Image 1 (cartoon, rainbow, N blue to C red):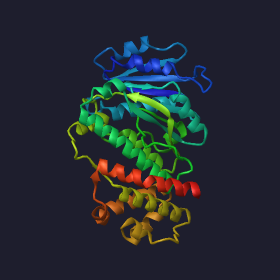
Image 2 (tube, one colour; image 1 turned 90 degrees about the vertical axis):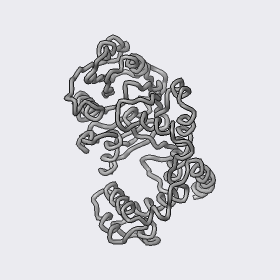
Image 3 (tube, helix red, strand yellow; image 1 turned 30 degrees about the horizontal axis):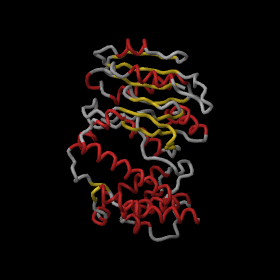
Image 4 (cartoon, rainbow, N blue to C red; image 1 turned 135 degrees about the vertical axis):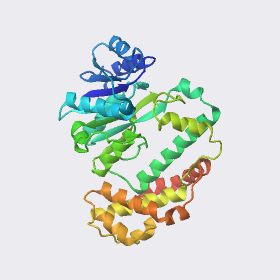
Length: 354
């Protein structure tokens, strides 16, 4: 197992991250050992590499690799790809690679929880990512409030989907996050999708989307927890820092899909999954009615070799048609959260009775 940590000018926090990795424990509380930490220090103008070597925890192998990428490829996308590619080579075909960030502090049971998810049959496991408490407290009130609302909303959405469209490989309780600060996957799964996709940003999300298109099993395990930086000025054009900056100025105008849309989408995805598993046959209401799009488009989607590709094609058809957006306009996050909280008790009772 190799934990990959891309780091650019992270002298202020790299030692804390490495200390947290050195404090990983088994379920029994015994120190978790036998893994390597790969720090990829790219284009650093500070002492990140030197401090990483000096902060190597006792009993943990830390390999620090310094690279200088060309300016057009010096961002986190290329750095994470290079770090995970190197980690995969170190871990070997039957190994496991884990992605985190140099400004992230994993909880002591983080690595063990990710590994247990993989041992239980998942091809990849995504851990819960929380904001550093001190930095979160220093955020502008609007950003802090909207972040909490958004987190509660997304957790409610995840529960709706888990109850209406259950995934046996990702059962409830689960969460919604799958980002590079807390992500583990087998080397086989990583290589099966060709590694980190060549995108402009959000390379971690693109990697998870590639796993899903290939019908590889992703577990969102709540037991794997890590705290990450809540800085408003980030190192990437699109990411958590830019989201927090937007929320700081969002006021009451932050809008999201409402409960009606969330429920409708979960039911539509569940029906599509059943139809795909049945070889394109579906005995319930017409799929076109559930997806608010044309039957031929959905028929073409169902011909895809994986359900992930079928689902992606169905979403493209839904978004291109316009009927879905007309039927489900976005609503303020406070309203959406209240609606979801009102709907969930009924879904829980129905699931329990079933």
